Image 1 (cartoon, rainbow, N blue to C red):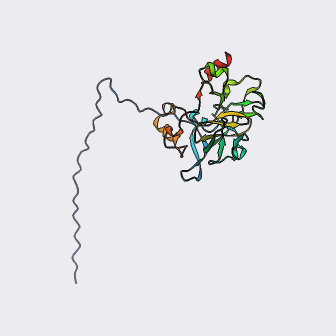
Image 2: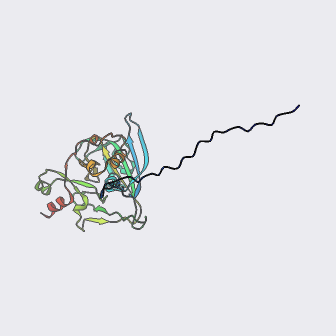
Length: 269
């Protein structure tokens, strides 16, 4: 039986057209598209958070975020080992948990809704990261065991002052940066020589934590935080506080704040 040779299949080959020359985009003389703004490269650091969930549980996370002053302020006000007054007595800040009730310096009872922490490193420990200064308020600096013992605060921590200086500024009481009180004698600037864990605390209603006999401001981002951060950074910042939805959820400030230069003016008066 003979088999006919298979016939080759006929393929339809599309015609190859000459490539179309693409013309460069036309811009009027002197007009070019504006370059896209380049976001600066931020150094980052690790932040630890614990917060009280809507159903009363305690949750926690570790996040890497920009090492910007606005972020660091939220995590580095009070040094490890500082005793905080609560309804259970004085508790070291590292042993606090969201849900515990703090007794504020004004005598109010406020639920702790969030605790943040970060580690400060000594000079040259991390290339390109400058050493952070801290403020040491020595025992009895304000008299009457205030504080007792020494109190070590972060670079942006504020304490509540109520005296002639704040009244001269127009306030019965006001928060002033602890570093603005440095006198080189009983309140001094120090630089950590070993890694130091720092903390900050958010209360259900903003107020003053009773720390070793001094009134230290609980964390509040301030009224103008959204103006300091672009929308992307602002969203990243508020995400560090899962118990909050917007900056407005932090509520009003318990007392006015004096800037460092305003506080210095009052101290010098």
